[in-house]
Length: 272
Image (tube, rainbow, N blue to C red; front, side, top):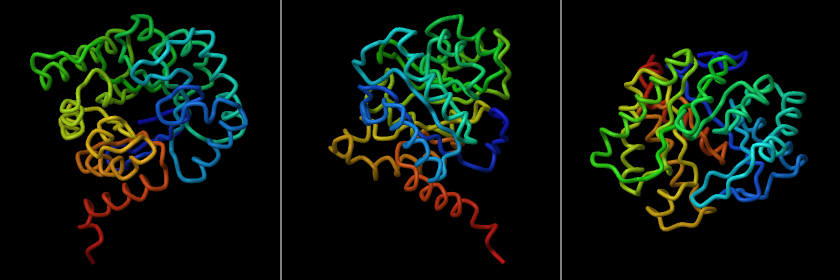
């Protein structure tokens, strides 16, 4: 697939999406990079470590987060995105579910990462289609109450894909994200990770976004800053089951994990 001006071989490679939250209250790194200079230093560090995409977010989406106005979100992310575009040759993703934010920054970004998967506002689909941007469609709901999680989860995603198709978003522009940590209980989050291959079977590249999340904390009984090894385990599983993107905080360690797993999967290519 093409994102911005770069080609991503999602059939053979796995790409790192680096997280840059310019927020005061994100669950893992809130307040660390909401100053412009700090954000740019972090971006440069991640780029040097080997990220392929940088995902910039201006509103925390952790459980119990405080919603910010459209204007405030734009004011947070616009200066960072403009400086990234000026200073680095890096693919830029905007982590936002608000069509007004996407529309305001559409000429500066390459991709939209929408945690509501076109379910928050019907206008988003139109804005994305018109912009021609790549689009990451994530599964989400207002509640984690399901009669049959496995079936309803995929049904929800197919509903969102129908909205995308009707609006004119090209299939070749879409990435799917199972939405680990959103409207799911502990076992449902594990199910999403373990069934990454089932999500891939829908015919779209898949992004796994588990970095430091509560499913890891609950499993290992570790606080946010001690969830690296758990994250690496989920990355390994995701890659083995076909994920094309992983959205993470810790770049070098996840990159090593991906390289190792891909080498094992491709072992026949190394046989002389």
